[in-house]
Figure 1 (cartoon, rainbow, N blue to C red):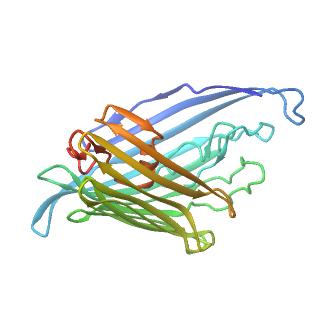
Figure 2 (cartoon, helix red, strand yellow; figure 1 turned 90 degrees about the vertical axis):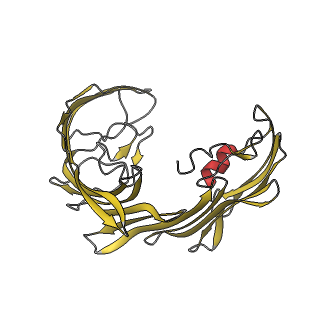
Figure 3 (cartoon, helix red, strand yellow; figure 1 turned 120 degrees about the vertical axis):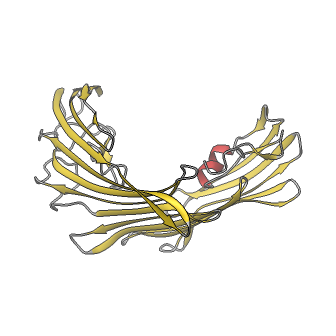
Length: 336
């Protein structure tokens, strides 16, 4: 089948020195042209108005911690969303899926990824964030926030085989991130069910990065009755020109390695050699293994299989070695 989509919308930001309110009105227009051989689906159109209002405030005060001056903010946020009900059970599911609730999706218009399902909604989300900002440099040092969504109506739109929501509120989300000591940063997230009075998800991680090209990441994450995982990764010099690269993602629940990476880089002044092995589980019994070998000449030409994207994805804070300088190429921005 074919899907044609248009989503014109109009928003009007209303802003003062300390607050902003943005009402938005859009219309989702979707047309489906279905192959007549697909039993159960017919050509159809869906026109769905979507209205939202997003309001934020930024309150500030001067404070001092350990003799260091900071600017502390308090930033409450209120997000209202209304989407009327439309029967979408006859629409095929090409690419829609249920989105996990987190700080990115709790303020979104649609709880589904893709466009084959658009949730009906009459709901409001409350959140508040507080930040510590250095008055000397303007850099953000710490950030903490909480958010929760409340529903005024029962859910009526769902994916095939997915039960309808019956709760009147979402899980409570809490998060923390920032610099906790020189060269050390930490982040933590917590998802708590107020309906069942129990934790649903929890994750905590820390990063030690004394300089570009030297980084160690440690993290732990847990989802109730589903997963318990540890994750360790590093990029660290071990000798003249040599740097070790490694990652180990291990499931405590299944007692097996989910993803592993090990390799080395050698900086030979005008060239860099990378050798990396990467293995990750594809099913409960199978895994895929890849070997990368790459020679980079003077930063302008590369020969062999490129592992850079794999390294960036697996090692947080990874810095590419530049053979022209014998230093990581992003040394000018060590905290980016």
